[in-house]
Image (cartoon, rainbow, N blue to C red; front, side, top):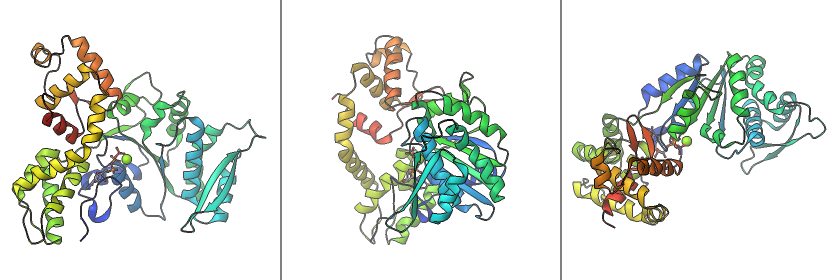
Length: 378
Ligand SMILES: Nc1ncnc2c1ncn2[C@@H]1O[C@H](COP(=O)(O)OP(=O)(O)OP(=O)(O)O)[C@@H](O)[C@H]1O
Ligand SMILES: [Mg+2]
């Protein structure tokens, strides 16, 4: 029998838990052609949620474009990723794809191939004979033109938007700002993780996209929804789990979607058909996961200097509400001065090991936290 818990990729259908309110909020934002920043810590379910909402929009009214910026590293790859996504959103067959690409992008030379499933895939090269046409502007103008041409509302999603902070210049950010302001028939959803970066992008008055959209932090999934979701999955596969066990599990994962599904996966394996999960199995499942991750965690740990390690120990032991600059904390974890803490924070933020939260910092990886605690004194 197939394990009903999925973790890692985008989830949909039966594997998608709740998010009713969030989906309705996003849907409304799309209907009203708003500009939104959706952000959260990693693996909170942004992509799954956005893709679900996009898929539910009626095709005859909406043109939806989803662009993953993860593989992009600058203006050129941004332009190519957009051109490809826009063209593919507008056309399903080869001829139309070529026609669309030629109509909208004067300096790009399209070529179409088909993939293994026979679906047309477009690639672009540059027309060196026409260097005068500003590429980025042309690409960014496309959604509004497409809305007009097709008589549809357009929704553009930029996923992994924090990636544009890695670009050499802020030209993409600047031009995005001016172009989205005028596109009243186009909804823009900027979606990303590394919370502090995304936030900085639209709350820092020095940055081009400052206040150019509403912000929507995506939160955890509440225990009541996990209760139904997890119970149904066990019951449907002839296994049992009590409400109290689900509560204990959710306390460990805090209802974070990825960690909850990840922990449910071995828990389901440990439980035989016709049996009920015992509370000891949660400990076993957790240990199994920590063992699996231990090599990666150990490497990460060994890459860190003494103070970042000490700060992590303190955070893992005391929890996110602890006052990391208080003299008691500095003493207990041998951090010396608050400037040492400051430097350790900078290192850990840069490596994405911690994240800033209201009033403090957290280690978002629940398993890394447990692993650190299990290695105390090591
Ligand atoms: N609504 C949901 N119901 C159940 N599980 C979910 C849900 N959303 C996310 N998950 C779990 O979290 C995992 C990550 O989801 P997803 O890739 O959508 O998150 P993300 O925030 O886009 O991640 P990243 O930060 O890596 O881009 C999924 O594989 C799944 O296990
Ligand atoms: Mg994602």
